[in-house]
Length: 229
Image 1 (cartoon, rainbow, N blue to C red):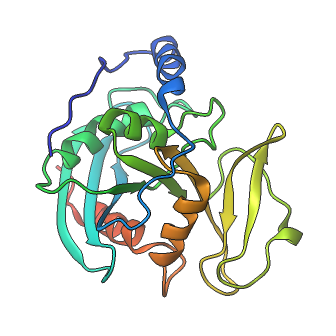
Image 2: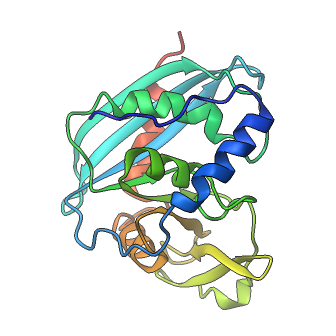
């Protein structure tokens, strides 16, 4: 898969903030996105290090068949995070290595689901937004924990498929989505070229047995199985 990154990677916080401001208007949260995707890719990273800027980042991409949920291709990449550890700017630590991993797959997925956030971000431009704008592929974030926004637990029934709006500053930025009866929700937000209803429908279909969608489960496992250099 060939990807042309349309910008240089920023070296500091002010450059990163300016780049987010520049790219934010390009993210399409209306969609509607792929209604019947054939191939869906999950992306995740694992870290090895002490929390500093020189941490090793292991990126993993797993492409699955949307009908059978069987893996059809996978790739990894390992690199050093050259950007400092700044909340809200994690994409600049992870994206360069994630792009390397994506470039190593032969197929082009119809949908990317990353372990992170999209619109549910302090500046409304999280990892999923940036990834989608760079690749031009429909992208959404599926996170294990919320970053910004709150929801009323009373609005979230304990059964699979229930959801509650995730709001921040009066704006709906995502959903808390219950993927299995009685388990904690996952947090879905749009990244690029997909709407929230469609993103949540696909996430639910990808999680027939476990809390996390198969894309996230498999990419998470793969990223942790790659030995550190």
